[in-house]
Image (tube, rainbow, N blue to C red; front, side, top):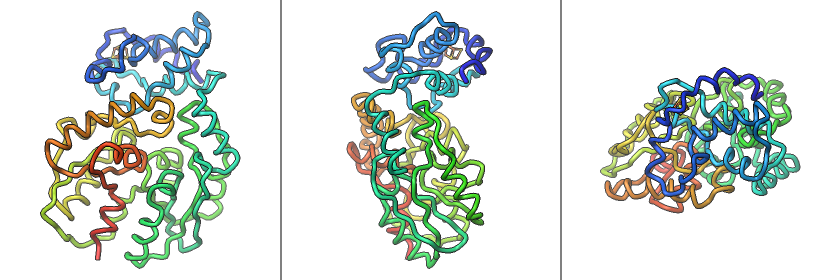
Length: 323
Ligand code: SF4
């Protein structure tokens, strides 16, 4: 609830440090394009000094909730949480978000795709909508190669729906509680946030826990930190350790907690494709200078960045390189 963030909002001094990482982009021109402006909009909605209209909705939704700006905020404002709470107070949804919600409600998949599922053992791989769409066959092949009979859970984690400011039902969580898996593995950090109560682990962590052998080739990879795996979970090193088993690791100039978002969060990209494209191009330019292939650790990042650069997701990298 936005009311819960009253003190947080009032703690914003308006210093504007949160704008810093945005200066690289051309699409930020108005105050409401910056985090500071969105905090002011949230304040206006909270006090009733501002009424909801299309501009307010667009301004609040024009943020991927990546938390990069929070790294620069001296007052440690939970900017992403404030923006998300403000979205929950909105009545209107942007048309692409209406579609996501409709598909989620009708098919338990934000794209309306069929969800792949498979019964198996007590370790579960939670597929999620993006992994299902982008690399379902790679996931199946990976577990075949590992000789593991995992259960594959299909369906949407609901996090993209939460991000646009709408509640979801608890069916997915109820199903997982009933199945009582020993371990839930995911390739998608969105799902890890939505299903946090189950202590899911990322595929990079799972692979390292198996102690797979190194098969290093003379190939350069540049790792793109997913904002959601990194700033939300603090998982920075495991994907790097996996990459170093198969090739040489190169870094973006801004990495780990300072890493830039690629614009690939699906609800952001669908509503703001030009802005999402500019963000991806920024990273693609830097990667191209290094001559390295970008490695993603989120299907949201992979699905988007592959339109702009030479990209492989960490699931694909592992599947291609293990014996
Ligand atoms: S950096 Fe923090 S305190 Fe400064 S304007 Fe942005 S949100 Fe407010």
